[in-house]
Image (cartoon, rainbow, N blue to C red; front, top):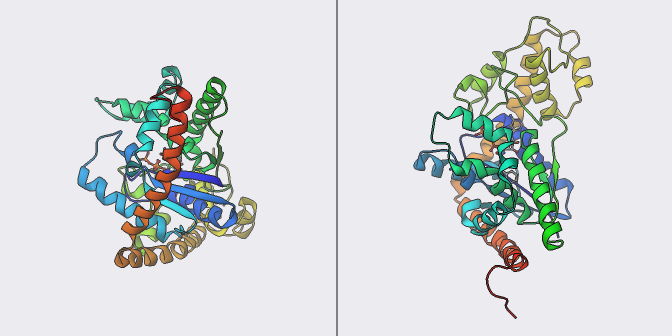
Amino acid sequence: MKTIVSGIQPTGSINVGTYLGSIRNFVALQDAMPEHHFYIFIADMHAITVQRDRLELRKTIKELAAIYLACGLNPERVSLFIQSEVIAHAQMAHLLECHAYIGELERMTQFKEKARAQESGVSVGLFTYPVLMAGDILLYDAEYVPVGDDQKQHLELTRDIAIRMNNRYGECLRVPKPLFPKIGARIMSLTEPTKKMSKSDTNVKSKIHLLDDDAIIRKRIMSAVTDSEGVVRFDKDNKPGISNLMAIYGAVTNLEYEAIENAFKDADYQTFKKAVADALVGEIAPIKARYKAIVESGQVDEILDEGAEQARRLAQKKIAKLYHKVGLGRKRK
Ligand code: ATP
Ligand code: LTN
């Protein structure tokens, strides 16, 4: 069976950027691609590449699991699991680290940015982060990997490593393809629209969390940075704020930019912002309601146990095959 793989780090409350850039896409694909099975996980091993509070991390892992389900992931179509509960991810990371080059990792822009943001004590894990990620993907022979476009470079590295190993050992890894959402692949900060909306941004006004109250959602959109032109027009370079609100509106309503421009050609920014806020509140309200029901139902642990079991089955086989290819251990009959 063909597979689709993706993950999100449990590094803080899920915001509209992560939702529109990835989770919403997982849900759409799960319905649109019935011939594929999905492995969607919580990338907790990635989360510890920078220092975190352990209790906060544990809380966020459970919250993300419930968010995935509240957004509509269907456990019948998706093996939903926690990365660290499938030991093969750590095994695969070492295997791939021996086939990735220091020079390639030094070029990763996310590493450079995250390392720069830390004063000292940049961990080796942060440096090898993209290799751990490559392992997540190659372990399940993913055909597609739905991600936001900030992950493009990591996907290219994953492909390069797979091709390198196939050349060295014979076909053993499927070369995956990224899948970016058509609209919403990069949602920007509401306060600095040239930066991506990020979980780790400390400015609360820069983002909207999926579990925020309706009033907060409206307030954040109404106070989002725009420009003085007063025309709803998509122009990322000169009008990053309005273009970002159009991306949010377009992703939620499935309208193209041209259709949005037409619909709001006589509207002022207040009117447009109100429409964006209404659309977003309408999209998020049922997620919040389902989140509450799922947490109260107590089913999350069972779903995660089942998902990890399914993931282990496939991943262990892959590791055994690769160890054999590379020459590790003993040859068994
Ligand atoms: P951090 O800020 O801690 O680096 P993050 O907000 O980038 O984290 P991730 O867990 O790294 O969140 O991302 C999960 C998925 O969501 C990835 O596929 C990523 O591409 C996507 N994503 C995250 N932020 C955005 C955004 N602002 N716009 C579109 N997609 C996003
Ligand atoms: N690096 C990704 C999260 C991630 C991921 C993956 C995404 C870890 N492993 C495997 C897709 C496939 C991020 O920060 N967005």
